[in-house]
Amino acid sequence: MKSLPDLNRLVLTPEQREAFLAAIRPFLWPEHFEFIQNLIEVLPQIKTVLEGKNISMARLRQMLFGAATEKTATVCPPAQPGAQPKDRGKRRGHGRRSARSYTGARRQTVRHPRLHPGEACPECGKGRLRRLPTPAPVVRVEAQPPFPATVYEKEVLRCNLCGRTFTAPTPPQAGQSKYASGVGVLVSLLRYGSGM
Image (cartoon, rainbow, N blue to C red; front, top):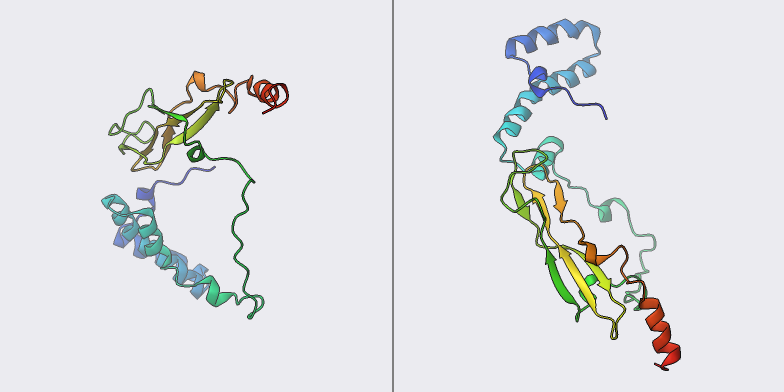
C-alpha cells in the first residue's frame, strides 16, 4: 500500500491557499474548482481536530461525512408486504460448541509473557495497553474418562490509541488441536468395548 503524504505538507497558509487557487482557477471547470477549494479549506480543520487527539474515529467519520440518517427499512420496502417471516428458533445440535458450553472444564488464565496492561503500545509507542473483558479461549479435551477439558483463557490486550490487539500465545500444554490424540480411541473403547 502506498504511504500517505505528510499532513503538514498539505496544509497551506491562507496566503499560499489564495495563490494556489488563483493559479489553478483558469484551468478548471467551476464545479471542479469549487470542489478543490473546499478540500483545501477543510484540511486545516481536520489537522486541528487530529492534533487534539480527543476525538473518536466514529465522531471523526461523522464530522467528515455527516450522520448516517438513511435506514434500510425506508429505502428498501419488504419483498411481500403481507408475509412476515416465521420466527424459527435456532435448531440445536449444529455447529461448534463454544468455550462457554464446557461448564465443568477447568479454567486456566494465560497472561501475555511480554506485555502487561498499562504499558506503552509496542506498535505505535504512544498509546497504553488495556485488557479486553473477553479473553481468547482455547479448549483442550484430554483422553481420560470422563474426558476432562481445560479452557485456556488467553489474555487479550488492546492499545487505546492505535487499536491493535495483542493476544497471549497458546501454552504448549494446550496442544495443536482441540482433542488429545487418544480421545477418539477412548470414545471407541467406551462405545464398543464397554457398551456405553
